[in-house]
Image 1 (cartoon, helix red, strand yellow):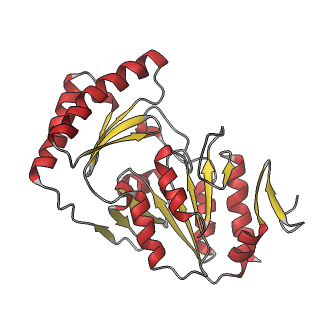
Image 2 (cartoon, rainbow, N blue to C red):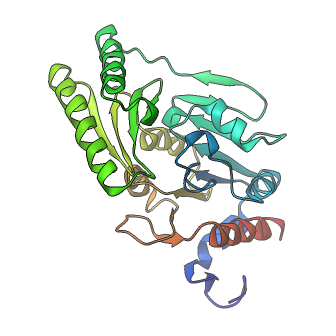
Length: 271
């Protein structure tokens, strides 16, 4: 089905309401929010090698040139995402799940953690214990959390890693009840009591007029809260090769269906 034929627009096997792209076409401004890992870039066992899908950066630039506010929201540090994209004009990037803000004009902002010293020491203790358990190559230390990743491991390695990580993380939540263990797509995270990605988007929506179309492209189970937040206000898209239970309205397979969606967005903006 072509872009403007019929009442539904088809992206290979996926359909999304033509009414949404009609809103995008009519609007004077639009907002596209997107995760990085699993959406703009394929997952890599080596997190240092998570480069974007071919051609994605050109499409992101096209989005920015058609009066679309593009915001990449990631658990990674903002400057790390910017280095992966390597674009001459960097989109707006919210790193550490919205704690950091890197703007296209180069401005950088970071909210004050206001975390008690005992909780920061608990994260340091967590990092040390995980390293002692032999998980140093699988951990990621963030401003707000310590994460254990097991993507790419064999089933037996995953089970061993999950068990070891849980035995380190769970007792710390008993000693420090304000810390949270958060289950991720392929990992566990011990997190400070700070706002989540969904909280950051809620704040954005309070400042956004209701006539501005908004869409979010997500991948992981940690995006489900954000999908539920945005449903009824915008379009929520699960970007994933295979289906799973989700609150998202539609699913797109990366990279081909994702590329088509971005091209359709740019096309209706230009029209």
